[in-house]
Image (spheres, rainbow, N blue to C red):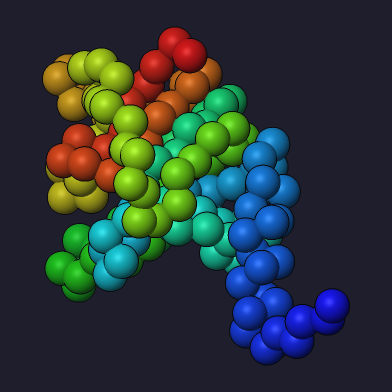
Length: 145
């Protein structure tokens, strides 16, 4: 028996079965203010939207020019990223959201800081071994696993 599917159905099937192709890739993640979830980029292309992202070998990066533009224009733009190797995620909308793992919360506010900082101490943070990003009030957590 043969089935005919449309081009859009074919693309969606390809997306479903190729999502795991992104595990193990180096990605850039940022919070998407329009979709209210995380956007995950690889090779300058959005590859996923996710409510949960786990990265290893992480770098926290703020582009100074983008930050200066936010301060000058008082208008948000994408200029801060969490960069690392993707090891796990839950696509948007995620129905099985993990719980917030700990109090090692990382935050960034372009009007107050020029880098990501630990929320409780305001100490700058540039790298971490493991990070879990959960689409909740506090979004970024440094974890041991």
